[in-house]
Image (tube, rainbow, N blue to C red):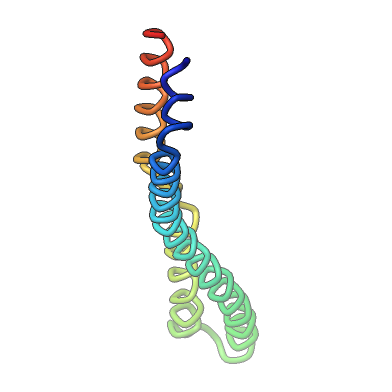
Length: 122
């Protein structure tokens, strides 16, 4: 009889403990990735709002410039929102770290190697 089957029959609690450990590990790593995704979503929303504010202020500045002439505040006021939108947009566009679910992948790999070694012995 294959060693895995004998463990499943004689000690099913070991398998359930192992699977619950996997679930905990996946839950923990998903929370970390979820936090990163949430940060990027907030940065994207900030970039979108600041971009819209920039467009409105740039239009108002253009109308005021046509009426009153050039003044530095007509550039600075919309420019601040453009800079904030650019910074937030860069934060939102960052890639997720390659380390996402690294521990789960290494654990699955170790388990697969163990199963292959057990299969080769039997």
